[in-house]
Image (cartoon, rainbow, N blue to C red):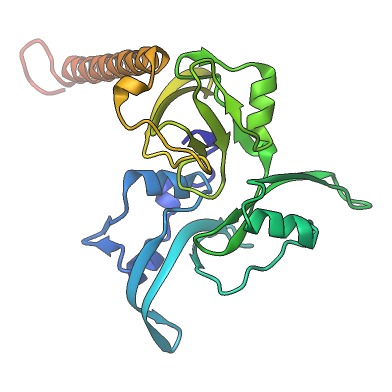
Length: 271
């Protein structure tokens, strides 16, 4: 998932907690791939509707909430619910005026450096989730910024703006900004984008669909409106996927050949 480094592994998922929420059937986790990737990357899922939940001694007929993962003090991964709060809890790092600007949509994010005596300096990006009525805090230094979007390389200045939650406009008119609120890591003026990232020493191409619109904008819904850069990047993505498939097939074939050679003598008897 673009811009957020993977934090959790799939074998760490608290399946018993997912089962309590009705999200496991026959040992299979019943959430979409995008929500799963969001969880593994330390992000939130889209909002979901749950019914007849047993919470302590009470049964809740219905609750709408987002989900995320966290690691407790013992290092165990647990599930956290983010329901719709009646009143938001203002972050102490922001003034009331700043918090209300986020709530009212006067600004989409606030980049804040926190300095405390005797402690390392920290930097946070604050946003407001209007769906859950909750403030979101992201650590920008932990984001993986794309090398290119829609076949256009990003400048150092553009990368820094994305890291700080600011809007960036590409040459083709596409506008994007990072967000920690949604399951996907950004809002954009286009419904779909292709990004390239440096991951594990190599370049990875990722196609994102279903991106939410920037505040006050409408998105192009047809692929023809995305521009040549998007189509070029999509072609690069397809070529990269084909290369991965070829390499995977080669590894399997080589493994089978080695096993056949090691497993039998010339007479055909097993060694």
